Image 1 (tube, rainbow, N blue to C red):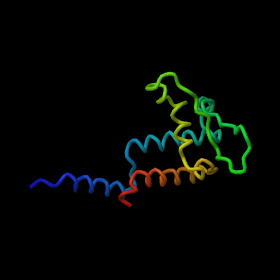
Image 2: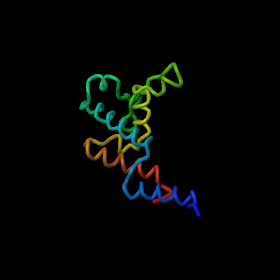
Image 3: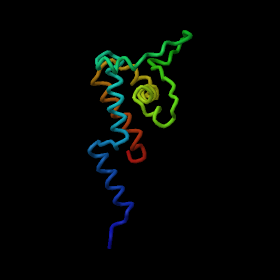
Image 4: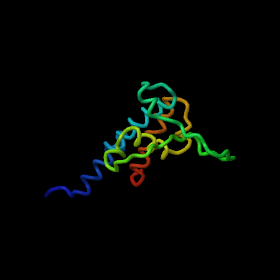
Length: 125
């Protein structure tokens, strides 16, 4: 008798949880966000640092939104939105403030993986 497909899926997900593996989409997001973090802190290559600009607040408020990046507009919805210069700031701005405001490279990587892992497997934890 063949195993039930739901039990196979559950076993695969539990193995990924056990080994702390992220799905491919989240792994790509992780890599892009680490590159953006390094560019924000001027630790990355110059050509990537030039693509990233920190958004200056137009008004000073008591509760600022933390470090946000400028999201350039794209003319093409499909190809333009996938360009690094457009997708990277969009991903970075979606992060919680405590992640965006990290100063340490290692702390950012650790908290980012925890954040992505929690969002991916929140039903299984």
